[in-house]
Length: 518
Image (cartoon, rainbow, N blue to C red; front, side, top):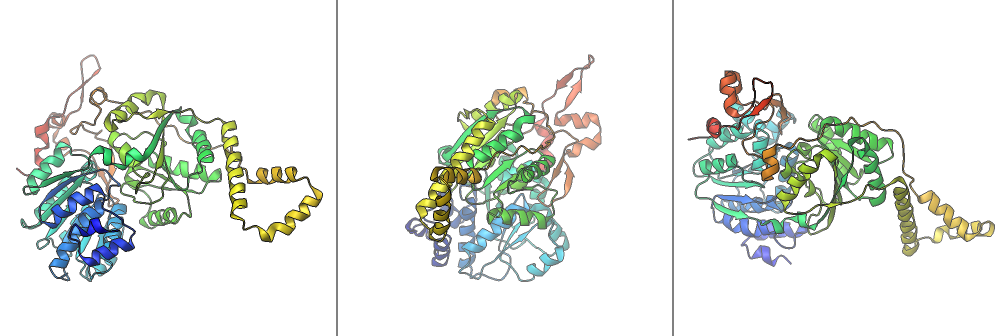
């Protein structure tokens, strides 16, 4: 069963772990990356979320440490953009290492520092860390990178989007020149290319072609709907489709809270996750979703980044993502491990151009569908009830109810009884009033509309805030802002003409040089 993994010259201990984890054959990124990384080459791996990247770099790290005799000291560091991803990566590496003495430790903000220090004293060979918290430990002297043999930059494009480029430069500069560097990124914008040129030595490039990405297994559709109607349409879809596990993506933290509370009001088993929740609450929600205690998760992009939860059958884009590339990451939450999935996107009429940009990016036409009506939702619920009733009858485990059924049949017609059973089983659409604050539609820059991709140097509003993977709010403003308007305008802004209209000024690429080593 695992012959293809064995052909990659993987040790018996790791093969046993792969077998226990249910792996059958390597994914394309794994089969191409593992031999390159085991051979000791620096590497750039370009693949979308959900293609098996963790094992693609986790297995070579384990093989390298095993070859060195598994010393009880830090050997490898994996940098992750969010704490959720750091936790999951560490968990998967520990599963891969279950038959060895090697251990991986997640290090992230929001967790008690003293607890992390106690765990560090046990000398894990691998650390999976968010950049901010790793730098905290470096300053304390509790983590030293001068002797590590491997460093991995996981989701490098997302770390760039979250403003971690300076942190990455600082961390990489503290590692030995002899280290092996593995960089994984779904996209390769110019700053990531410059980062690779600075820190990677003659890297080999491994790309997974778009046709191999799991998004092709997903049935994609969109519904054109006004913002105030989205919630009712969502509830009707949930009633019609009865997803086993569903993730609903929204644009803001406020929407997460309002949506999850609204769903609970209407009787759905739902929770929300975003960056302002405590780590304990986030962990609790994710655990409930994994264990299927809840079956609907409302989330922002940052909170859901890197979540690797099997069995997600449906994704709903309640709000279109600001970044077209985020659509791929969202939809990639379903349709994993060769399974099919379904993704439905709500589009405000004024956002159709933004949808077309996404279609150009994924090279796929997203089918339009009608919003289900109340009567269609009721009919769908009735069909579900019939299906459940028939399935229960087919299973045959009804003997202990037979006497009760015969007693009822003595007093009622059989058709009347079955009709009553169907009525009881049918979940009629709940119309409890729910208020979801409306959001302004996305605006598409004319250059974006023309090119179909995000401009790598495009500046966000200087008032924007970002929440790092460590849970700290930081300004998105560039360093030049404080030097006055003349210097700040080097980064690209909107200057007012004399007639009061705005003139867009494209950002100057040279202004970004301070972020990279010469």
